[in-house]
Image (cartoon, rainbow, N blue to C red; front, side, top):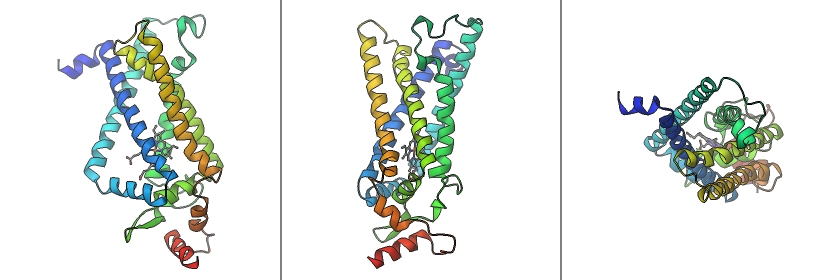
Length: 261
Ligand code: HEM
């Protein structure tokens, strides 16, 4: 039996796997948030950052494949552990929430499913740029000029994208469920790794809550600030998609807007 089989075939091994893949996804969430918070700077900042990432395809694809592997292993170990628990205790507890199980711990699987659905939508929205899912128009036409070069206008895409009420609502609901998932999952991760005694457990729970709240606030203020016209409103006005009769691509419209100023 190879090492992976040995890990996979023990429930402790699966718990470790779930904890470590969860930790990697948490690190991604921090990095992704720091990248996205650049929306509060000038458009060149986040556009330059996105352009830099796109100019390093090997790094980006390596990270994407790593993320995909983590998501797949995290879900597979969660599902098989839940099945093992159900087989070990076929009768459900008489009272929900018994034995100190928090509401979040009971909803790890449902919240996880909504988060995965959110990520699928989010990829269609901002990465694959599927027209028709954003309620605005074709984002792949959006270009900005950066150091005399035409680059994807990520700033424009975000400020236009978060002017749509139902999109913002969906993002906020998903972030609330992500918060529930992390609040329990981060503490459970340390528990799986063996840190659970009466001194460390309250500290770990406090830190897990603080990190989840920080991510919740960070991820929610982006769509909210844009929706409330506190960020990027003038820019959105400048590049707004024109009615169908307007054939010029938004980049051209943006350029015309600049000339008119
Ligand atoms: C307000 C919240 C969020 C904003 C504004 C946001 C913004 C973005 C943007 C603009 C991109 C495309 C980057 C590019 O192609 O240049 C992106 C990609 C992505 N986002 Fe988010 N994101 C948010 C929340 C999340 C969350 C909560 C997750 C995970 C649970 C997530 C996972 C991803 C993934 C996996 C990608 C694809 C990265 C790639 O391979 O290109 N995002 N996000």
